[in-house]
Length: 116
Picture 1 (tube, rainbow, N blue to C red):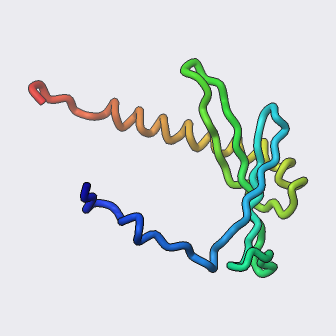
Picture 2: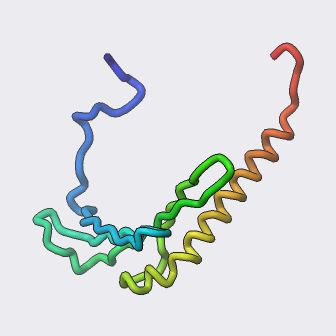
């Protein structure tokens, strides 16, 4: 099967200057925090770059669970990430709602022409 529209799998290359080790922390109830620690190509920690924290949670909707993911801005430690997680999730949810409302407005303003 020839897929001319996308890159070949054999062309995928790892950027050795942008590697991270991933760790997950969860309370087994509400959320998960991922800590992405920058590493060098040999696996040692890269002290010249800051870790990145990301949060994940699921919101229940009438149609089932909705996964929400976010970057936790400004967190330097796991403790800071845990404290900032609720606001980061709220910010992501508000952005999702705004995007859905914009799509709904765009869809409702379309002109429907009979026969199309």
